[in-house]
Image 1: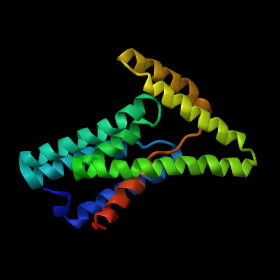
Image 2: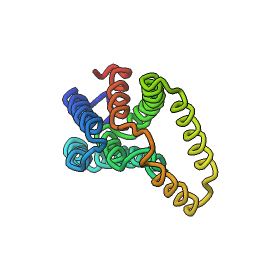
Image 3: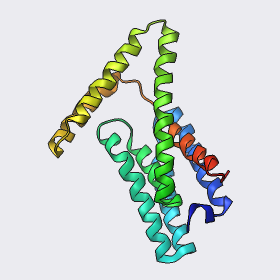
Image 4: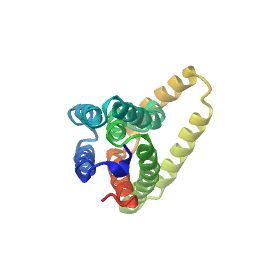
Length: 191
């Protein structure tokens, strides 16, 4: 079943789940398991009921793509596990092709929001050294990521990210995931 064959109630349900998760993430900086696990499981069940084992296969492929796309940013400390599970839920409901497109739009929106957060805080504090500090951190993280050659390197980068987290500006990534997913629905003419 393609994304265009899904009933509008599925599109609305996924949109509503993403909005709820984004609001909670913006408020508490966490996407709770009581949203993510039922979101994933209900996608699997829906696709088994409507498409049998073939439907389940497509749903599992979408779940895997959602997990894989956000696993690296999670491992290096760029987002929380709830964000990863939330996007796996998008994959469980929408399949791998939609999930890939929604990821691209969400990543773009996340980058824009991160720059806007830094700019807003710098303007509010009337101190552009914060922007310079965050640009330096971004360059440092990018350099660390580019040096990864083994699992040991991943562990080292992850440990460095954990050490930096208390002083980092945190972007609740459920927000760009929701905007990107719902925006992709609009892009495809589904909403």
